Figure 1 (tube, helix red, strand yellow):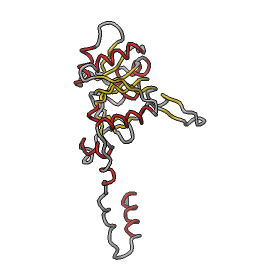
Figure 2 (cartoon, helix red, strand yellow; figure 1 turned 30 degrees about the horizontal axis):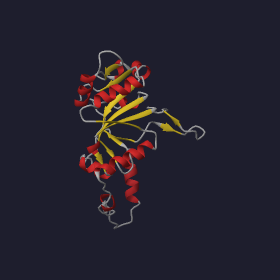
Figure 3 (spheres, helix red, strand yellow; figure 1 turned 90 degrees about the horizontal axis):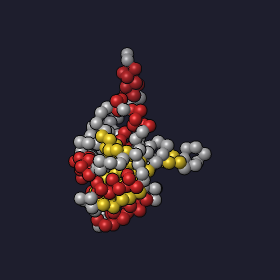
Figure 4 (cartoon, one colour; figure 1 turned 135 degrees about the vertical axis):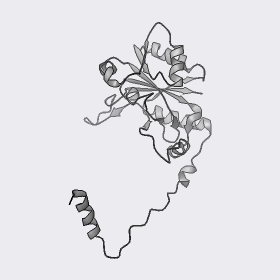
Length: 221
């Protein structure tokens, strides 16, 4: 008898005679979370306050000039280059606004095996879009995929993330419902609240150990 069948047989044997399978759990009550609602400006304030408290940085921009805000930030730091997803709508807008001279705009358009060394040693910053933010706790929602792979927000020392103010949800529960995640989660979903940090060594807080040292949110109003 295979191991699995042996385990199942032992479990069945241990059930009292005539006993019934456990009843299905009652439907979950989300009413408390549903009561948490804020006006748009309050959602921005709450998200910004919570994320700033854990060292996230913010750049404010308008719907038409956020690419220039990204360019100005990269030049001002200064950062040698910026890695981005060239196949997204936002990536195409960023490429159109990118100056011919100055920091390089590098497309993430090949398997990681083709430029692993450059990714881990030479890339200064990565740019991604977001699906939205969470006002209650502060955080950005990302669903990495072929157009914006997970390493784009994980490996570069600086992560620049684009967030539209009208996509800030009250709670994670509401975000999951509006994004359709209550039915099925995406293969890769992230909630990012700030730069990577750890206090594993001697309880000393250190940034950038497991990911970016800085998170810069470009907030589009």
